[in-house]
Each structure stands twice: as C-alpha cells, then as structure tokens.
Length: 168
View 1 (cartoon, rainbow, N blue to C red):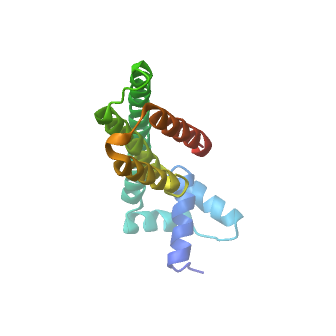
View 2 (cartoon, rainbow, N blue to C red):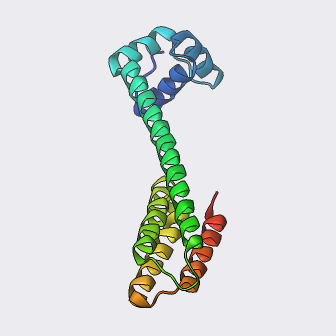
C-alpha cells in the first residue's frame, strides 16, 4: 500500500529525517517503530520534492542567528551594567548636597536600555521593568530641579532591588 503525502505525514517524516541526520533509511526505521510505515525511497523522494535540505538549512541558520543575537544582547547588557555601576560610583563621589541632573538622566537612560533589552529577550518577565522605569522617569521630570541626593540614592537602591527580584 502506498503512503499518501499529506501535511501531517509529511511533517512527521521530515522531523524523523532531520532527527536521524538526514538519513532516509534511519528515518524510515524510526517511523516504522512509531507505527507509520514509509519506505526509505519514499522519504528520499519527499525530501527532494519538498526541498527538505533547504528547509533544514534555513532552520539551522535561523537557530544560529537567534543564538548569536541572544549572545550579542547578553554582551550588550553586560556593557550597560558596567556603565550603570560607573554612574553609581560617580554619584557616591558627589557631596551630600550636590546633584548632577544630567548624569541622573543619563543613568536613567542606561537603566531603561537594560530593561528594554531584557524586555526584548524575555517580554513577559521584563514588561514590569519597563513600566517601573517609565514611572521613575516621570517622577524625576515631575520633581525637576528639586532633586536631592538622598532621593536619587533611594531610587537607585529601589531599582537595584527591583532588578535583583526580576533576574531569572
């Protein structure tokens, strides 16, 4: 009896073929063990007709691209975290009444960038980080020139605690 190519059967055959190292004979044996008898020549014909080699290559390229992007984002976060720590060190060197509004805005931008990258990598987990940063920026803008060092330090502490809680 000849096996008809349909979407489900073709997908099962493709996955078996791919998992068996693109070997039609091994894929046929695996499918037979699962109760789906398809001859190796049929699998080879389907692979040629449906362009399975190209599909597998595209999938492999896409997986590699995603891994590289995540590695790049991880390196970006590490750089931003280092910059965040430098700003925090700078704020520690300021006198008890001194405040650098421009540095505070820059610090906020760095923290927001960290949150945005995390949001891109893990949208569900880090959505609340972006919301918190938005509230933080609005509160700084609302206070304008009346920012004091104690307030800024308290906010930085809260941000650090928040990041500690949401890190996976």
